[in-house]
Length: 193
Image (cartoon, rainbow, N blue to C red; front, side, top):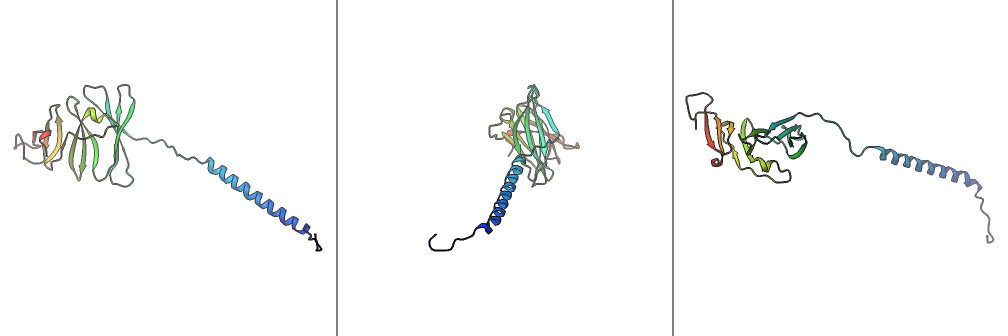
């Protein structure tokens, strides 16, 4: 050193060792934190037991099955539709989010040409009718062929493959025999508004 005093760093060695030790400890803690975080599962798998309700499609050997799952934000359940093959394999068709209407698979036309899904809001059912072939196509956006949503229709009792439905009315409007209780009548699903 030029004409100067030489510094004594020996007193700083314990402080340096203490600092290096602390840094090593922090590094080890950080590594442990990463190892712990890496060991936590990124996906949590749970087994859920939900009732699977299936209805046989007439003349086909297959079924459409429905699972209702509790809706997180709405008062009614979400509904998931599956196709069940003759070999008992399930494949996902579609899901509908419950909002204010209760949704269920009502059934099929007598020969299986049509699939009927019901939506009931405040006790008033709407029967949404699809061709079964379209309903069984999972990747296809489906459009109903008819909707029966008449305040005076209490139930859809049967539907034939020609589009004629037997319905029960809430009152004697449209009845074949107005003097009977549970007044029934026939309607053409393609002539509904």
